[in-house]
Length: 496
Ligand code: PNW
Image (cartoon, rainbow, N blue to C red; front, top):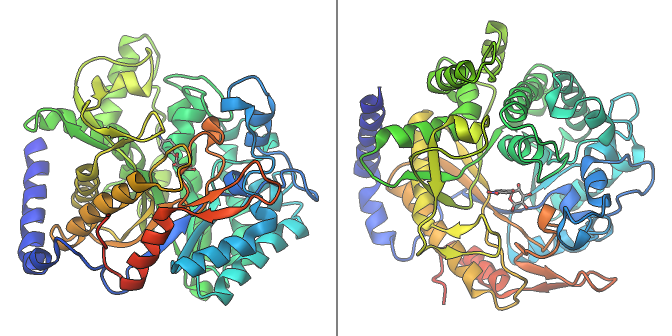
């Protein structure tokens, strides 16, 4: 089985190289972006909007989590005001326009649109805010890419079980329907759920992010099961009720670490790491037969049995659900920041998704670090993971929907420019040399914002925000100026 996989990858690479090799050679040092390639920027509602309690907005799990004020968030920072984009969105759009980006990925806040969490009560103010934002984007020829849910679900739904409850599938579907009905005439690409794996690991396994549930070995599997179903529900609602009229697309999102085996010949470890981290969420949607990967099902079942459970900790999809989920994506949205090396071994609490793998993740000490403790700079991992995704899942259309570098807030942010240059170069090699079907790229992020549990201590913006000033003054960093040149020339201008 593993030989087939690597053979398939080699054949894929060979064909792709043969087709695009000539083109790539001449452009390797100073590559151009393909015609029609989308270059955009990304944000998320809770991280930038502020206005956490204006009008009839409901409480989100991040409002609750950040108001505990007990050190779980760096400096006890909150998103109460954040970058103040609820009031300053026109400034943000003007910046995007000025720099030359042609698309904006943003998210809508569930409790702002549905204050009770349910579709029985739609907030007119909430709905209007995003109409105004979208109208402002369209007036500036900036294409909206709308994330329906980026981690800030209503606290009331969490109290009723959140992503551990299968009811969430219907609740999310009802919310998605409101979003399509309101904005589908203006927005042509939607991503239902931002990074299901981050939600399920950080929110329901280790509990370092909201809602803070520590349910190792159980929480992550229940959560991923329900997010996959909820994604499929949102996809099918669009397909059945809106697509023929609105003619848009709905894509599945995957937060893609690259896992490279320490020993390049250790195909088995590479395969296990891939299937446990990518396959458990992508296989149900993108594989030919659907469902979780056989390898994940059998390993978790076996471990659960050894641990004395009466059944596998990994829930089972009923056959109807396997069919319903399979194929539920028009494009693959990929967030990519960093890479891990992998080797066989034991790690993680027993039981846990981490422990089930019997794979140890580590980093090369020579890799440059960003400000975030999880972010090492490994450009080659980007090409590697794009190639893996392409070869495993039939080279689907992909958009890179996040990629970026954190520091402590420098205006002269050369390391960020270098990160973008090196990563974009690898992405272009993946496109031109390997033939990977990447159609667009969104950097994270246009402005500095609330970086979740790290508060305002880690900055990803290419534009700085003065969080100490009531005006939340925006100032271009050097990386923004560099991007302006890149966008004007549509070339990957060297980092200097
Ligand atoms: C993404 N990790 O999250 C999110 O989608 C953004 O909201 C966030 O601001 C951005 O990346 C930067 O953190 C991630 O631990 C959170 O590997 C954590 C990880 C990766 C991505």
